[in-house]
Figure 1 (cartoon, helix red, strand yellow):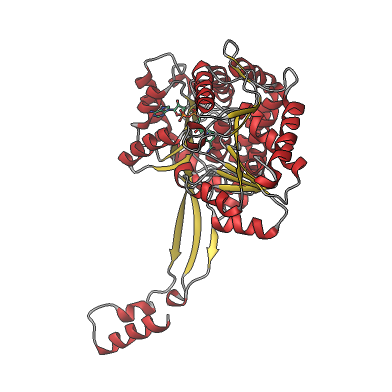
Figure 2: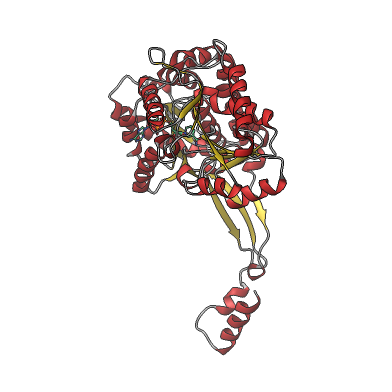
Length: 479
Ligand code: NAD
């Protein structure tokens, strides 16, 4: 990796008062942004290649950090932390030359003779604030897009996964000078101090509540934002679904990372005709996938363990029944995959994002009822449908809105680098992944070149007369 500035100009990050550190790193990146922005596709590709190599070389450190933070199984760390960043980087490397090439656009008749193109230029200095639930994936994934688009980046990982934050700081510290990419560790106060800076773009992943705080701060500087938020992602299981297949895929998508996934199935709407049969299979699949020791990680910390325990107790008090699980071990922050029926529609579990291994089953009598339940809530980040009936698939897509959808699967849409990833309304603003991520970190500039000294438009410049008025009339009618 090229060292772009004299690293000795920077005291080690963390060795000085936080506000000074933020000022220093931000100012250094501001100074650097034009040089980083002018880098060629080859130079950016080389940076992405180095990041990929470092992730593979430090795979065991990443596994260790994830285990230390909340006992994430090593295989899950490989698949859900390292792999998504690698595919993002590989995809960007393969396509970057094309993405960076100005794209010509043909002229409308009224501007006949002009030559126009669309250019993607870097936004400049960007801030990436990330959550704890996939710390590597949701920090380094956006970083790949930021680097591909030619930006400098300051990263603020979550304070709730300190081992992951330290590991990322170490990996990135070896690859980049802080004047290009810097990690600043800390919690809400640090994020607040960072948000006072006039960033050129803020890419935030986290809860809708904090997303609003970020957007308010961005408004002070009119910084653009990408907000990757959460919400309640429903699953519909239609009577035409293959129940075994649906049960397996829902069990995996729901209880992976102990349900601490932004796109995890949040609640299940199941056709009443097949509900009992489906629940029996779901219980079997959950048992088969997650009952062995080491097959699932823990809840991230005491606060979230208690939040989930309270939510379960509240649901039971309001009349819910535990169909599976319901066992918690607060000493270890362990929460057994839990399935519930009879959950009150007004209770916390059907009103707030669950973000944990609790799954309410809500039977429905006709599709219209299921769609009403979904449409009464905020637009979800993901909507899942298990059905082999094309008319049901078309109807659900036409009559709902969501950030993304997978039909006959869960969660895997996240891994598709050709699909935009993001929310709608309360679940987010903007898009990430692949070209959409590159675009999020780019200013899309329209450029028109006028080769003619005298243009037809000048015939309509003032002062006006009868001839010009006639021309204007014709323009309005035909051009
Ligand atoms: P969070 O909003 O509490 O925290 C996210 C980040 O914001 C952390 O780095 C945190 O330090 C920082 N932060 C906290 N308070 C802040 C403040 N007042 N000002 C500025 N920054 C502040 O979210 P979380 O608990 O880490 O993650 C869970 C949430 O994130 C869930 O809602 C989940 O659905 C969502 N999420 C969304 C996606 C997505 O891609 N759409 C991915 C993962 C998680």
